[in-house]
Every structure is written in structure tokens, then in C-alpha cells.
Image 1 (tube, helix red, strand yellow):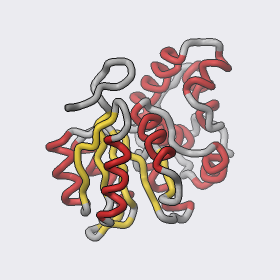
Image 2 (spheres, rainbow, N blue to C red):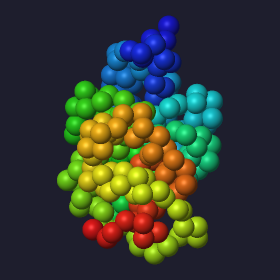
Image 3 (cartoon, rainbow, N blue to C red):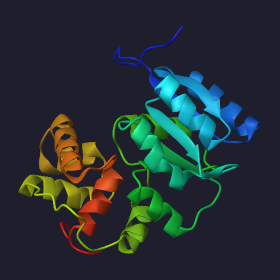
Image 4 (cartoon, helix red, strand yellow):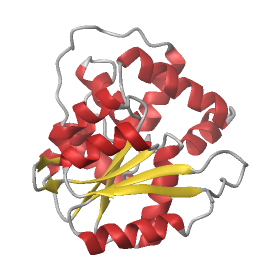
Length: 221
């Protein structure tokens, strides 16, 4: 029987993509032990992952970077083509900064090291499902200067408030922290993030940030 989330909504549906069965099994058990979460399956290859995304309709995908049939970052465009609204958190043993930047620019919601605890992993799932960025402010500050500059094909016109929200996103602030600073509701912030993401064609807050930088909508770090 599926457990509902704390507010009575459907559980967060999670797909685990990792070719190490013991790791995948441990993560799946941790997900299923949480109230309001359900592991809809695990995949050991990108091909299996794509098939399961079609059939199981996950809300969040925990995606290993190195898989037998390719790397997770390169698979992101095909994942979003199958399920545009899915949130993807990269779970990596280690990755160079450029790999993380590439993941952000491809739409990942963030990253989690395999050295982190299962509690941190389930917290990351909840954050990603809520539209938050799964990244520390320190890591974000380190990666921002590496993001590409130069206007994309279409330059979005953001409102002054949306630009203000983007600046705060670039500082690594959560939606709640942004709401506190702007003295508005978190629901209002979520709407601003959703609107600016739609204008930029982004799949996550982090991708929206990278696209805004590329379009010259934010000052360079």
C-alpha cells in the first residue's frame, strides 16, 4: 500500500538508477521507509532507466553518473524528453567541477555525493520534489564562474522581481529563505521560480540560473 505524504498528497515517486545492486537496494529501502515516498524501481543501465521512466512515471530520479551504457549527464536531455517535469538528482562517487556544470546546464536539480548518509539522500529527494536546488551555497559559488556566457537563441524578458529572485537563487538560497528576505509567501516565490523557469525553458532552478547567466540576465560571478 502506498503511503501518502504528510499533507495527504500522493507519495513522491522515486526511481533509483545505479548499476551497483547493493547500493541501489539500500537506497530503495531507505526511500520506502520514509513517509510520503515510494521507490517505483531501480535500473542498472540508462536504457532500463528510460524504459522505467516511461512506465513508472517517477517524480524524482536519483541518477548515477557512470553507468555501463553511458554517463548520466549525457542522458539528461533524453530523460526530460520522456518526462519533462521529472526532477533529477545526480548521485556521484566523485566528479570534476566541469561535469557538475554540465549537469546543471542540462537540467539537473543538484548533486549528492555517495559518501552522504541515507538521511541526507531522502532529504535531497524531498527538496528536489519541492523544486529546490540540491547543492550547497559553497559549491554553487564555485561553479557559477564556470557557466557559459553568451546569449542563447531566445532571450527571455524577466520581470524585475524575477531577476531579484534569480539573484537570490544564485546565492544558494532556498525558496523559504528567499520568501523571508522578500517578505512574501513561499508560494509566491515558487510561482516566480516557475514563471522564470518557463520563460527560460529550464527544467530546474539551477538550469534556469545557468540560462540566465548565458543570456546576460545576471551579472557575471
